[in-house]
Figure 1 (cartoon, helix red, strand yellow):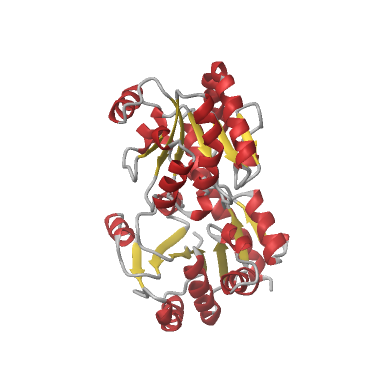
Figure 2 (cartoon, one colour):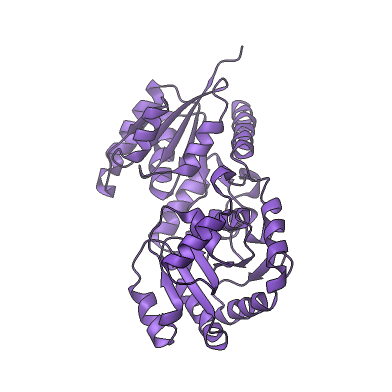
Length: 375
């Protein structure tokens, strides 16, 4: 029997991480001895893994002045536990984790490109060079969640394409099913019973570009008074509320804030709209498609790999309100096709399973460990 490969997943924060839970749930426990660590203080992440009886820790480094000590502490831990593979997640954890692994001479150091889609907007700034340090010098290999993310690493950070593997994120689709009861409940809650609802789900954050979505929706709201734009996500709504008033569409916009019943939100909307400026993958796009929604997406992350423009949705250039609005109008006139689009979309994303993602990660670990041993 082959000895277990000792694998550490190292992430910045310790909040709830369904993606990471899926990765560790589906990784082969006979082949891999898994540990999970966070750079920041312990939280829901550690509670989850305590319940799952997975080895876990936190470095309790909550500000960057503590990072040098965190590097040394983690390097000692990696050496002591004889870790074979470290896979880092998010910006700060990648810098600290990969630097520590370099010091500890960990055999295989992998950066996961969840965050690096933002770096194209910081080119020449300290954050950009920090990510280049991780991707070009500290990491042995990179996992990009989409082909577009791989292209960003190559074009903006100068990473060799041979160093990058594309592995799509995976999902547990159990809870992503349409609910007529949920649809009716949400529509009744917000008094939207007979409305056409364009919906967007995600944190209100600059890179999600909801300002462009509002500008795109303004002429639609005027031309089609039965339409509503619903935005479901936490974050500061101030700028969006102000723009809504300036565009005179405030009565046709609904902010739900953060919700636990996201599947019911998806059920309630008619068309999913995703205006982001960039994504490494865009998990919410797959979730909307799994919920049988026709979609309008900016050409970011996974979108171009799963959306055929005009067939199962519309793909538009990021940041272009005029073209996004035109796609919204086309979608209204394609109402008779929404059901067929939705069914096509659910079938299209069935391949994005958590089991497949974990299996592809395992193939990368084994292939890259073998390559490193030959050096």
